Length: 70
Image 1 (cartoon, rainbow, N blue to C red):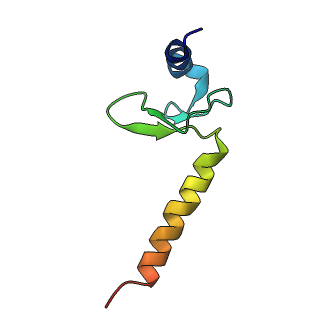
Image 2 (tube, rainbow, N blue to C red; image 1 turned 30 degrees about the horizontal axis):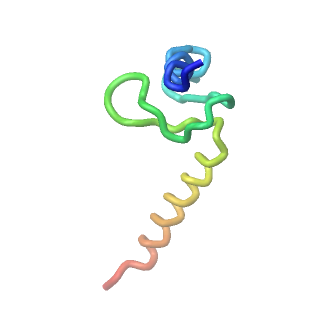
């Protein structure tokens, strides 16, 4: 099956969307994918890299908050 077609099938499957907006699909290896509605991207919360991404973003935010230049 074509990769783009498979991604579209997964994206359209309501079983892969928790609470209607949280994408969770272990078979889908993408980290970022288009939002279900509207513009932009969302994360695949079944991908472990999602959690590393959050740790990195929050870690950087905390670092810059406590180490701002005076």
